[in-house]
Every structure is written in structure tokens, then in C-alpha cells.
Length: 332
Image (cartoon, rainbow, N blue to C red; front, side, top):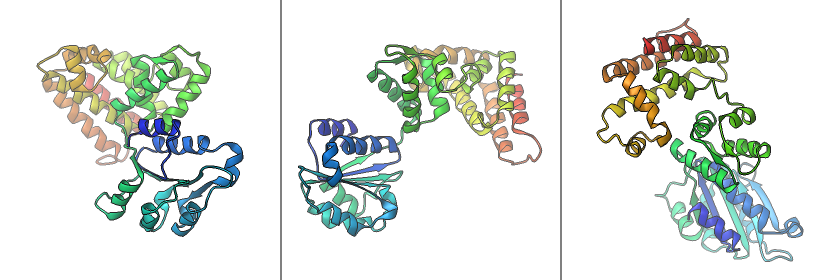
């Protein structure tokens, strides 16, 4: 079952005896279990009818015992198993799955991994429980999620700010949601979030970041590029070299791909490169400044710097010096 359908059913008070929530992205697992925790029972009912157990500290027999209790002065009891990936012999829940107590809502939070779908227990879970897999999102999907999350809260966001968020907060939705919630406390509803809001409320510099470094290199703005890499060298903890190199590799790979796109209409280029149409002009300009032969050299230089950053063939050069040398070789 999909996340939206599960939440819709819960809001309509359509409850199922067992929810098995698994997968690499913990955000959606937490959203579902938290909704059940906060909304199925009222405060007076929770005292006797809501139990939270942790996989590392409990066992299957205890879970079954709790699940088979009848509710006291309520229609349901809720049993939530957090960190169920740490539970030993979880497959021993099979008999309960096959014959659950209808008045119990058992929620199993199995984070960062999934069941082996070839095995019997996974098939039993799929048959008798609401089985939800929370998959990790790729960056382009995360950007769409951020836009949707803000829209539901009454905000919009411009493309540059969107890139800044995903560049620096990664693809973990829980971390992103926390930062957005803090931002929305300080920004009035109806505002279009821009890079200034991101800098002021999340702490990501709108001038000295990987996105601006790519842009400066793409237009061959040597002064700006040097200002940014000097800032990176002075604050290495905030700008890890390995992340910067990975970002440059992806950027120049996309510029190389641009050269081989036949249909260069804006939407097609955006689709092929998997970027927001807003940034297509930047890639077009960068492709004009870097021909295929130069790009092959650039990508080779990036790979060499990556090896240096990992200590291969290098024992003395600092991360800042590696980055400065790389950017010099790219732009000259």
C-alpha cells in the first residue's frame, strides 16, 4: 500500500490489525507510526491501551502477549514496535500474523532494511498485514517532495533555493523536514522561499556553496571560483572535499552529455540531464565554454583528484590544495 493511501485510510478511521513498515527512508515510517500513535486513541485511552516496545529490548513472545490483550474502555489498543530490525527471530510472529486480534493495531517499524521477499515471512506479511516499503529517494525526487511539502504548508520555493537544500542537506527526508519546519516558523505563510531565507534560517551560504562554485566554473569566472574554493579550504568541515569532487564530477558529466543531445529544446534537455528547466541555460553556456575534448580532460583530472583525496599517491597535499589545483586545471 502507498503512503498516501495509508494516511487517508487512517484519517477516515479505517484501521488494520497489522502495519509492517519497512525500508531505507525512515521518514515515512515515522509519519505513519506517529499518526497512529497520536490519533487513534484519545489521551485517556492511551494510558491503558497504548504500548511502545523497542526491538533491541523485547522479544517475540512479549509482543504477541501485548498484541493479544483486549482494550480497556476503548475500541482499540495500539502496540508499536520501534527499531524492529533489531528484534531477534521476527519470523516467529507468523502465527500471530495469520490470526491477529481485530481490536489490536500492531505497528512494526522495521527501518533501514527490508524483508527478503523470497522468504515465507515476507509473503505472510504481504498477505496478512499492511506492508509498506519506504524507499530511499533520488535527488530529483527529493526536490519534488520538498516543493510539495512546502506547498501543502502554504509556501513556494524558487529553483536555486531548492538546489541549495538538496545539495547541503542530502536526501534524508527527516533531516530536511526538520530544517524546513524551523524555517517556516520564521517565514510568513505565502512566502516564496529563496536563497536568502535558506542562508538566514538553515545556515547554508547563498554565495559560497557547491552550486555557486559549479556556476562560476561553468562561466569561467576565475575570481569568483577562487573566492569560493578559498572559503571551502578555510572551512573544510562544512565543505568536505570528497563531496565537492563528487558534485563536480556529476556536473561535468552532465555538460558532456549535453554535447550529445540532439533535441536541445529546454524541456528535453532538462529531462535528459535530470535538472530543473530553470538551469538549462547554465548548462548550455557551460557547454559553450567546455568542448568534448576539454571535458574528457576535466573528468580525468577530477578522478585523479578524487584518488589524491583518498590518499592514493598523495601523503602531504592538503584537501584545500587539492581543490585549488583541480579548479586551476579545469579553468586553464
